[in-house]
Image 1: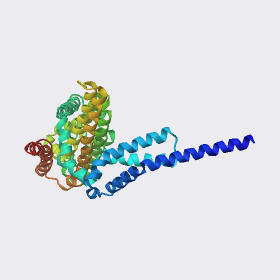
Image 2 (image 1 turned 135 degrees about the vertical axis):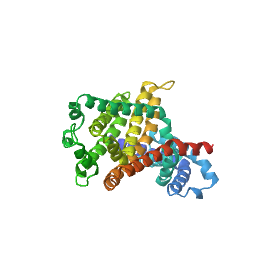
Image 3 (image 1 turned 180 degrees about the vertical axis):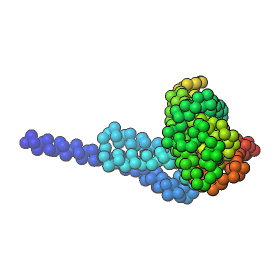
Length: 347
């Protein structure tokens, strides 16, 4: 008798809950269905087919759905209903508040303004990074000039063939112009590209530590280049070496410069947030620097293509300078002249 009474009570509880859930659904289901239809059209790219009433009702329908979801959870209503409302609320959130843009549109905006604007916004950090890179090059050059043993500490041992302190002019010139001897220098160029790509990523990633690791990475990386420059300069081949390097080096080093500046920007924003909180300053700097780093990847890809093809096909020093200098001028115009004037004229 007691068991039958318990079973009856359980059935009544279930029936009451089901009735409550059905009533809840009937009272609000029309709004959910309308919201679902609007969201579905927008997800399919048919937003233009929506009426003005639907567009104006979208925020209110979204808030109504959130309210329904909250009540459903608090009242422990049907699990399927809760799952449906959660899915509808999530889709609505991305539609109402999410960034509505295609990849093609994002790419167009990136190249036509957002990348160059992000670079200009960290101009101070670019000057800091440039100063550090120049100092690193001078440091490597000076150290090796004072004591040639520093060369072996700065340059990896697997590149210590003919390009070492004391090498003859003929041997060094052969590495720059002789097709037979270019393989060794090509390996060195490939190493520089790989190393610089790693430095770019690390210089940005470690910027959060008040930019100190980023600065040290830039100094060490450029000291290697300074050491190698001295080896060629001691035989009067600095012009030829810089020309050989400039084909891909102007783009590659520009990428290093921007990556280092992005890391410094993050670190400097954390160390000196100004009137903002540390968290807000770090967030804004991180978002700005992330845009710059997307561009750095593009620069490194361009440098890799130049290193892989133009450097091996062109052996005339003057032409090497023309290509390297043209690339540098192009990037400077793109970031600091052309886009800047274009945006000002549009205001």
